[in-house]
Image (tube, rainbow, N blue to C red):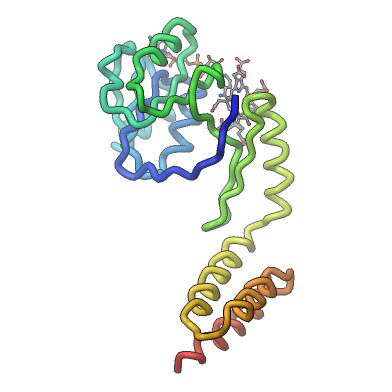
Length: 204
Ligand SMILES: C[C@@]1(CC(=O)O)c2cc3[nH]c(cc4nc(cc5[nH]c(cc(n2)[C@H]1CCC(=O)O)[C@@](C)(CC(=O)O)[C@@H]5CCC(=O)O)C(CC(=O)O)=C4CCC(=O)O)c(CCC(=O)O)c3CC(=O)O
Ligand SMILES: NC(=O)C1=CN([C@@H]2O[C@H](COP(=O)(O)OP(=O)(O)OC[C@H]3O[C@@H](n4cnc5c(N)ncnc54)[C@H](O)[C@@H]3O)[C@@H](O)[C@H]2O)C=CC1
């Protein structure tokens, strides 16, 4: 199986999670801030999922899965503990929908990488289903390498790049600046501030 990473904007997209157990909970939590419209289909759900339902952050269809649950699904997350049901969900998914099969990476067409955010920076690691635990371990290593300071740093890189773009400096000079900002000293907020002040002064 060959896969490529894509960052997906799920705003207002219908995402249907089949199952209400441990794995469904993990997927719901991952998807909660994505802007997607989340619906859980399961006769029973864990208390944490129920809390989100009571807060009206997700919909819940308290029933066993039926094909009609997927009619408008952009993404279907298959997470029941019944292999026959999981297979039926995959069979019923609309031809162009995304399918995440928690129990069988090959049966679906997308999977969740291990991941963390530092503001605008996303770092995601996948082993293509070979060893989710390795993906998690690599994530933990990278979390300390790319610590919380990167959130502000990436915001700085963004602003500096936007300001540079508006100048009339030649391309190679802009590139040289952008490369220089990647040196570790610019992780310091004082250095970032200095650059932004200087770049803003171009436009005065
Ligand atoms: C295909 C995929 C489907 C998908 O979910 O998209 C899938 C499938 C399966 N996982 C299984 C087990 C475990 N999964 C984890 C953990 C994570 N699993 C995640 C993703 C994925 N897991 C996708 C592939 C991603 C990749 O390969 O890189 C992570 C990275 C992200 C996330 O879940 O969002 C998350 C880390 C979150 C974090 O960063 O903390 C742990 C460890 C733990 O929980 O601590 C264990 C127990 C140890 C073990 O078994 O290895 C089993 C066997 C089930 C069984 O035996 O019944 C299957 C099914 C199978 O392989 O058949
Ligand atoms: N992706 C991952 O990281 C992992 C995946 N898995 C796989 O995920 C699957 C689910 O595991 P858990 O969440 O731990 O199971 P669980 O037993 O906690 O939850 C199963 C849920 O499925 C629901 N369900 C059962 N039949 C249903 C039906 N006909 N329609 C709708 N919902 C139904 C149950 O009500 C329950 O809420 C398993 O197949 C397991 O192999 C397991 C561990 C890790």
